[in-house]
Amino acid sequence: MKNKLLISALVLTILVSCTSDKSNSDTDIVVPPVIPPVINITSLKQASIPFGVACSPSPLKTDALYRETIINHTSSLTAENCFKPARISLGRKQYFWDDCDYMVNFAIQNNLRLHGHTLNWYSASGVPTWVSNFVGTKEEWILIMKEYIQDVVGRYKGKIKSWDVVNEPFETTGVLRNSIWKQNIGDEYIDLAFQFAHEADPEAILFINEFGTEYSIPKRTALLNLSNRLVASNIPINGIGLQFHTSISRSEIDIRTTIHTMASTKLKIHISELDVEINPSNVKPFVITDALLLSQKRIYSYVTKVMLEIPKNQQFGITTWGISDAVSWKKNDPDFPLLFDLAYKPKPAYYGMIDSFNQK
Image (tube, rainbow, N blue to C red; front, side):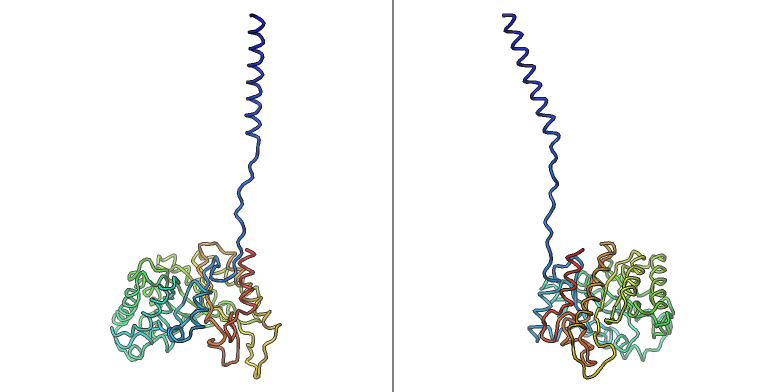
């Protein structure tokens, strides 16, 4: 009996020992992490940075190829002309809304983000005739600017996600343009414009928008200083629009320096009106070559690459100024600066952008 008890104890000890060893062995097993598959995009509509184009109501209504190319390849729209003040404002508190309403409804129906362009601009398209003829005190000028901005932004509150509040405020020299607003209100017209827009829609993302910062160091510096001052003064600015109407001759260092310099403000960055000329000297007659198209591809690809380098929360979007060479504002130069050719076929530059997104 005593021997049986000894044997039983020995067996129990061995079993416990085996169980313990098995448990320790289990904890030593390394389970590899689950790595999600890399999914490459095949369309800019899928891009991690929203890709958009500037477009207009008339061709959206009448040109099926124009409309379908936009729907199939973009996730964001900019109103090319119909939101410019001279198009909307017929008189004080008198507005033409039809084209703007169409753009808003088109964006909503097709699940596209809509960017409003622009609330304040120095040019003829930005200054209605009645404003050019207006005579009043500084306070009265401030009031008409406030009325206009808040009427427009307020009408589309919650529907238009972002706005170019002030467009092209600087000369190439970096000096503030002597616009009609500066003449009658002073430099503070910029601060006031942002405040009025924010009051009308506190959720809207508000931009200052400028061209030429990739080649004019004085303008780039002025825009940087103004943006930093607005932030420091608690003016409700959220982003900087860099138009980038550029060409195949633009250096990569100019592109990189501009984007990273502006990103140092911590504001959102919108490449807002991108096109890349392949005939910057306006040669006539002009022949498109494969070499020129590859040079254009390099610029589009590089702009995308640099945008992917800045913090994710600052990557607001990349927008081209038009969808196809057929509707480019440069077509009569002649030039072919966009991602789709005259027949709305993607060009090498389109695939260059896709390559940059897939290599991030």
